[in-house]
Image (cartoon, rainbow over all chains, first blue to last red; front, top):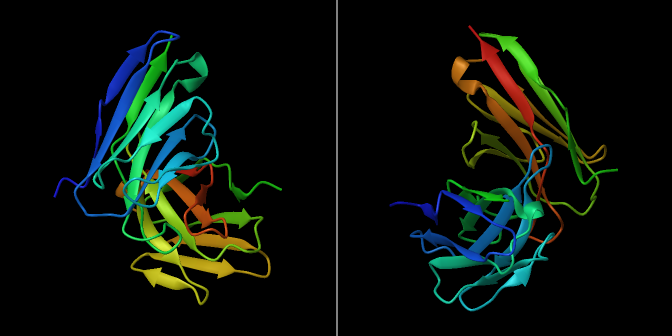
Length: 114
Length: 110
């Protein structure tokens, strides 16, 4: 099993450009999450999904959109990138709700917005 | 009070030392507690869950004090491979969401 994979691993954008980050998991997990990690701060939840076709806002959702059309995939979109969105983005998944079950993380995407 | 607050660190210890990390949380409704480990430029990975009665996994011991809203992690006989950032993680009362502490960096020196 590959576990949780993320595409791309690195990306540099100019302000105003758009992009989509792809997360895929092969563990048949119901729950999926997108986090960002910035220096000196803990991981912060952007959006999450409790099942195929459902999404919900996390702690810092502004400037991001998500979609979960297939159970194994969770996409994070940036419509108009801003320098404040420079960060490391982690996707995670869990079999059950994260408070009860281990979250498995992908390797991360390092995004720089110029 | 921040939701999850950890020792700022960094901790530099010699091999074989015992080191303890502390963490406090503000939401008294929290029910689930974890320690995650994150190696440099890698993803976080679950180290251990923390149970009310305390629990041990080899050289690692986790303790929970609900009255004081305090969690600890003790590492005995430190190894070079223990060098990493340790994240204190607490659910927010909703099982869907976790709050991550900023992490404490540990470096174990030969």
